[in-house]
Image 1 (tube, rainbow, N blue to C red):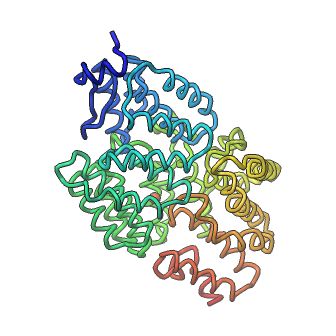
Image 2 (image 1 turned 45 degrees about the horizontal axis):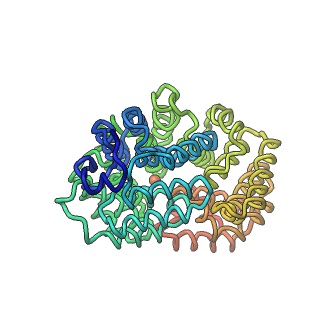
Image 3 (image 1 turned 90 degrees about the vertical axis):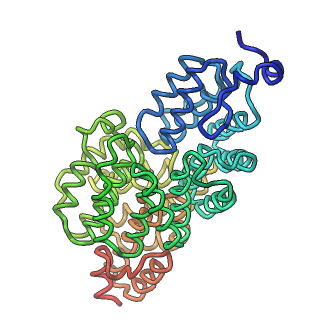
Amino acid sequence: MRLVFSQQLKLKEDIVFTDVRGHSISSDNQLAATACSDAIEKFVRRKIDVVPRLQESLAADSTCAFSQAVFGLMLHGARNHSLRDQMSATLTLAREAASPVSKREALYVAALEKAVTGDLFGMVSCYEDILRESPTDLLALVMAQGELFWLGGMAKAKQLSDAVAGSWNQQVPGYSDFLSVRAFDLEEAGDYAAAESAGREAVALDQDNVWGAHAVAHVLLMQGRHSEGVDWLQGLQGNWQETNQMKFHLWWHQCLFHLERKEFDSVLDGYDRWIRNHEEVLVQAVPDLYIDLQNGASMLWRLEQAGVDVGGRWAEMAELVVPRMADMTSPFTSAHFAIILAAVGQFDDCNSLLQQMSAFSADRADHALASRFGEAAVPAARGVILHRRGDYNGAVESMMPARHLFWQMGGSHAQQDVFFQILVDSAFKTGRKELVGQLLNEIELIGFTEPSQRVAYETASQRCV
Ligand SMILES: [Fe+2]
């Protein structure tokens, strides 16, 4: 029989289970707590089967508020509007859950509530509150980084990992995963030496640590160390069998290195086998996962820009995007939707997408993403579409005033670069040589070593600078 909160704390403390780092999971069912803890470990390590383990937890104890909250937050993380009703229902169950919860667990429920209402900065504040008292709560740190990443808030993410770093050492379970979070924060902040050191240490401690591998791959890309990048990722690919869709993103990185070496056959092979392969079980399960579509759109655009015929590869993504044009869960993803729809010439759909993005920005001032759509994603998407239509002046006009705000869409410097590539190509095709030179300088200031040597920029650079 479940005890009321005060009784449990006073008389039955032993029925409050913990995760591997000692943080409470309030349930009177051991299976529920164990499955929830296991799901957390899989999540922070970017492994498959997070949701099935949470479902096992909830099947064993549907009144575990913490498991309900974590499940709802996973639904939020999928950034798909079709999951919004399920998220809200999960929030209701978490609120109604009979289980006694600690203050920390209550903050997870509050974070889910903020996610449902679109108060995404409030959501991050919940994670900050958790980390202030529980600096080794890796779930909160990983969730905060993920949320801030898609809000363009990586400077804040670095502050969070700065604040908790002193509490971490090799004796804390998950130290390798902490290092990988730290490494990516440092990389996006431009501290490449420290990022590479932390990322390599993370992988040395745990060869499966894809987030650490990923942080190092970013460093190698930003510094133009493309051959090292190929070797780095090739050496680690054998460890990714249990990895979630993050492995596809790592293949996107692998293809970027091949692209810079002009090994286009390798890029196409990697694209077909890993970036967009409907034979893959994970793709069959979720064919329209937001980051997978970003990977696919961004890679095909870059290939075409390099003069490679990509055949009919755009079509399957366009089919998946059309039903999601009203999905305003991720401005960066919506801007990639524009890349896909424009590539297949569906310009009526492009207009509809732009209208819906603009309307969301205008009508949902209460939502954290509204300004991000209006100030960054709409001008970026419009620029993409105009570029595809051959209106290069229009593309420059749309993207130039917004380029300093592209970070608001979220994503890494490496991912955001495709929009700068489209802007530079537009400037180049309008014959504005001085503008090309200015933009290449700005791209270098973002953190790319010698952008003029990179595939996407070399022609414009040679002819304009
Ligand atoms: Fe990446």
